[in-house]
Image (cartoon, rainbow over all chains, first blue to last red; front, side, top):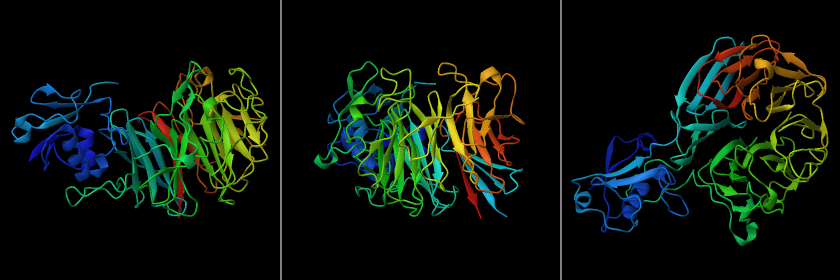
Length: 98
Length: 391
């Protein structure tokens, strides 16, 4: 199972706690994790990446194993620690604005 | 006894204020959607328990929420948890995609601040306007300016592309608040007639249910654009109509208060003795179609009331002759603004008038504006106010 941590507002929308678990078919990438997340929680479609372009929204970042994955290819394999469930995949709201 | 339900959108959540027909004691519920910008909430005239809400965020984009029980519970239509992993959602209530089909006469660019052409980019829903007859039909005015419609209770949205495609789109440009379609007015007597207004493009009318559109800006004069009498480019802030007289429109423009007696074909200025004719809101009394309300704001660079006095101005003669309504409103050191969708009227007798400020106050008058009292004083900045009159 893949562990995912959402920002607080998206947890409220999806009605989940701090962390959730997803079944994601291999290969486990940012794209496959987000596809699985949006399929499980349709309310999140469009909130993390654009409906049409599938681009990450500008004020969100992706982290895994203390590394910033935001600018990596969405199809790059995520670290083994994420695949094995040892580490979560973090979706973080940027500290911006007022 | 009748009741009123006031729907308030703020920068950091929504609030629902309720009272009986006396409108003296208020119950305040909220914040709903805490932390989100709630641009607009509006109830369906066909089913008052059906309320639509525009929930938006610079981080997470646009979400549309819907209540079927008068605001007690909410959900994003079609956006609930899917029972089976991998199953695709049935609806996408937050998906606003501009029409690019060949039949949609798609426009790809509008005028940018520097005069160059700029691509259309969806940002948020400013205004939701439910149908008079069908609770599942609702229109959405969006930024960058376009009109969308849902016929399935906000599960899915389709653009009415005739508006952007009718020909003047390349001349539209953003106002200071963005290029927003902020006003949608339906004609109760003629379901095929729709009015909309865009900042900064002007007002437009459709007589065929939104398929085709024409600019209705004849008579507007805007000194801040190269041709003050141009067909397009006016910064219309809001338009209001009494449903019993759908051919008579009132407009608060960037500067100037205007009226039209022929469904927008021609406008004339009715600013009269107002202390300033800059402002954002305008509304019409529910039972007296020649009684109108505005809140004058000092100027386009000083968005607060003149002299620090919060005054609603009322005209009982359809404009030109205005009286200041001050009883119960702060008359010193008041420097709030009242944004374009932040005034509403109920249909009780006497007519109730409501408005919200950027300082977080929501004021109500249960006597058509003669006197005012705050319902609440310390909300986040108020973006919109709507009211439902309930049996």
